[in-house]
Image (cartoon, rainbow, N blue to C red; front, side, top):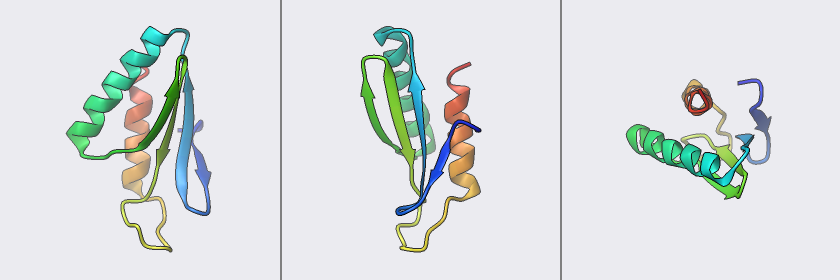
Length: 83
């Protein structure tokens, strides 16, 4: 979890994952897609040949929303996809 960055305005968690090849990037994206579908949580994702950027936002879209344990847990599950 120490590689996730908590950002403000708007509040969000962000992390960049870097890979050695496009194949590794694609495999990670496939696993991330399966995890997202099973949890019904859909982060913002941008990617290139050897990287994936993920942004997690609070479930609530209220202006004063904060990151909750739910987002931290999902971030940890995403980290687990690297194992």
